[in-house]
Length: 79
Image 1 (cartoon, rainbow, N blue to C red):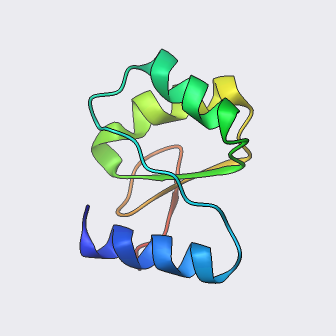
Image 2: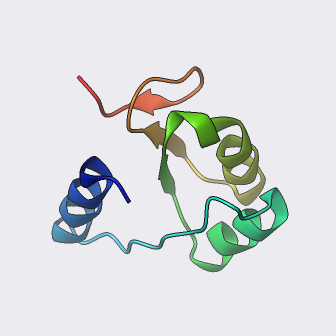
């Protein structure tokens, strides 16, 4: 995990969110299942995983995809 990722997770928990992590080796199907089981509404990832995570998040019905860094199709948390 990156320092920015750890900071984002800490802020989310402080705001009352439930935070779950996943392996960067997870398949789209595995990630979709995890997002559904945890009833995720928002997903945070790194730019290199956006295509995979976006597909899983859409399949799971998540509301928004955020990224640490910049990537097309995701809302950046970086300045």
